[in-house]
Structures are given as C-alpha cells and as structure tokens.
Length: 545
Ligand code: GLN
View 1 (tube, rainbow, N blue to C red):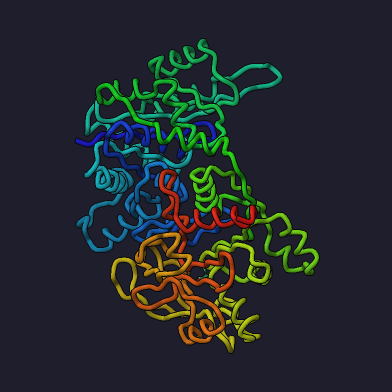
View 2: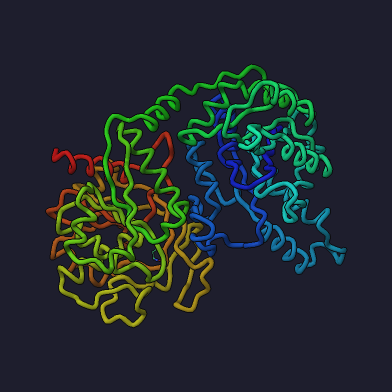
C-alpha cells in the first residue's frame, strides 16, 4: 500500500512549502523508495496557462502537455523525473469535474455537496497518483485557515482515516518570527495555526519551522510540547544559500528518523553524495560567466523560474557561476548603438526567452541583431527563435515588413504565422484561428525534434532525436525556409510534420534558437544540453578559447 505525506502551511504564504515538500521527497527517493508528488492549488482557475506571469510567475509545462503551477517544475528538478498533468490540480478543475458529472446525471438527481462529492473527487485524484509509487508527498497550496483550502484539508483527513496510522503523515510548515525589539523568536503564531489544523481534525506529526535565526533547543522543546509533537520532529529551516541545500540541512537534523517512525519505513540511509557535490559547485564554483537575459517580465523573476534554475544547474555542472544581467527589452527600444554597446559591453552571451504579445518585441529584435552582428553567443527560446528568424528576414533578406502574425495579423511578410491545424501531444487533431479562445489552443508538451547532423544543436545533444516541451501558437512559415537558408540560416531541428524546431546562423561562433522550451526538461542532476552548451560557449567566447 502507498504511504502519504501531506504538507500544509501555516501563518504566511511563501514560506517555501514547495521546497520543503520536494526536499522530503528527494530524501526518501534517495533512500530507495519510489516517490512522487502532488500539488493542490486552491484557486478557482481551471486553466493555469491563462494566468498572468506578472502575477503568478511561470507556467510550467509537463511532458504530457499540461500547463501547471511552477512548483511542479521544482518537483521535477528535485526528483530528476518527469511528472504529468495528474500531479497538479486546482479547485476549479475539481468543481468542473463534479459539475460535469452532475450534468451528465451521474449523481442520479442527488443533492451534490462539498462533502462527499467534492472531497471524493479530491481523494480520487490523489489516490490515482499514489497507485504506482511507495510514497506520495502531497503539498496543499495556501495557508491553513483559508476558506478555499477547507475541502482539501477535509479530504486528506479522510485519506488518513482510510489508510491507517502508519500510512499517513502530516507535516506543517510554519514561521517562527524574530521580533527585534524584544530580541525574541516567537512561537505563538505556530501554536495558533496548529490549533486551527486540530479544529478540523488534523494533528501534525512534524513541524518545519522557517526562521531567520537558529532555534534554541529550549524553544524546540516548547514548540513540541505545546503543539503535541515528538521532540525530534521539530525541524528548523533557516534560510539557505541555495534551495538545493535544504534537503541536506534536513538530513543533518535527522529528519528521516521521525518520518520513518511515523510511516514505519525502517532504517534509512539516503545516498546524497552526488547531490552534495552539485550543491558545493552551486555555492562556490571556480569560474564565472556573464549572460544578458533580455526579458519583459522582469519585476517578477519567478516568471522565468525554470530558465534561471537551468542556468544555475548548467553552471554547477561546468563549475561556473552564471551571472545574469537583467536587460528590460523595452529599455533597449529607445537606445542608440552607442548605448547598446554599453549594455552589452561585458556580456558573453545573450539570451532571449519565450514570451507573448507585442510589448518589448522591438527591443528583443535589437538585442538579437547585436548578437548576430557582433558574433556574441546567442540562445533564443520560443519567441526568442521566432524573433531571430524575423530579424534575419528583415536585415539579411531585406524583407522590411517581415513579422509574426501575432503582432501584425495582416503583415505582408508573415515569416512567423499561425498554422490552423496541428496534432496535439495526445495525438488528437486540434484546430485554431485568431479567434480561438486563449486557453487550450497551443501546441503544448513534449514533441520530437529531429536534429540535423553537423550542427551546433547536434554538438549539444549528440543524438539525432530529442523530445522537448513546447508552449506556443505560432510557427516559422515554411514558405520562407529556402530563402532563409540561401542567406546563411541553418534549420538544425525539425518536427515530424516538418515544422521548424531550431535555427542557427552560419559563420557565427554560437547562434542557436529553438522553438521549444529546453528549460522545462532541465533537472538538477541532468541539466538541459542546449542550455549547457550555450553557457559553455559563452564562457569560451569570454576567454577567447
Ligand atoms: N508568442 C509566441 C507563440 O505563441 C511564442 C510563445 C513562447 O515564447 N512561449 O508562438
């Protein structure tokens, strides 16, 4: 039978509940168990893909084409494995399923209620994921006491009741604030949030305490006694230099002892040697390299979460610190050549990530032109590839009006255009037009890319077929392919249907742009190969190797 660890949060949001959950899961996985994770989001949105990156951070895309919360990305990076659409669900999706069932008449005219219908659907989804693993770590989004969270807490309480004592564990992540004026760490908010949990029938077995300062033993004892928790199950989570240090910090406090006691797992000896090695390289690498990151969602860096992590991981594996120079694409728009020189003067690589909408596009085009003409290593991702093609068409082919239909639906030179028919990740034919709703009409998830031998892309992957994840609506227009090639653009990757998946530029040290998002397959232990190749080539450029 599978075992369950439910992770709840108290006092505040943003305490690192996702990292705590992933750290516990990683430690159990390294102890030899088959582990997976679930993230429950209490918001009503059915389709997280349509949520603004300014407000919500990145939309992560799974191999099977689900647009999920960015925590799923953390889980994949920690667990070094692909998760699926089943590993993340929202209140909206739960209600939608129940309402659809009701409309179909599945409830035979009964009154449909939160208990048992909503809670049953929540339990069904969690148990479905638990089916093929030893342990599932379930992170409940939000904070205990939120109105939206109640049905989820009730559902997981019921699961504990059903699977029995040694098969379920509750971990509560909480804050121990330090009050400067009093010079004291305070336990009261934690006591209150544990009381709130108890009120709905859940007694946590472990407290993970976020704190700025180490917790004295006496305070841990006080917490344990007042919250009715074993003394060895009060774990301190001080701020760490990197999130990947967190499992190691937990291990140093013997976190697996109380977990094993509760879940009856026997003696555990996780092998964290490789992990430890990588973390050391993240914290103090020998070399460094500077990359310009030309984006438009810069107020909320979480919008580029996976890409930032991918640069860190690549750096760690190359023994390098990747210093990111944030460049706002809209600022570039107003700059003359001299000013551009100033911005990119100390830069060894230029990165244009994915994006939607017209804002900042002209600035990104300027950065791409600069990289092409000054032979600075360039990596373009999704929109960053579409714009590389547009820049080339405008400035090398001389097609002044070259554009994407996304920005000018009536452009006379649609080098990037909307295909109205494609096969989705599950093999279904999808149709779309300009008027299609924004949710659910994108090419999403893992698709094969056939890599052309003798290209930079091949040098990076060293194989002729890769599966990378996609999230886009527009494509490079095949009608321009020959003209682009004639002037020195190389198509280095294609999809099964012949769509352009990657381009490069001849006579340039390293100019690679890809239609997919390589950052989504990137993991701590296995960084994405194109991103790593970009970082490596940026370093070579800097050192003139
Ligand atoms: N906006 C572009 C498209 O929809 C690129 C998307 C992206 O960069 N993720 O095709």
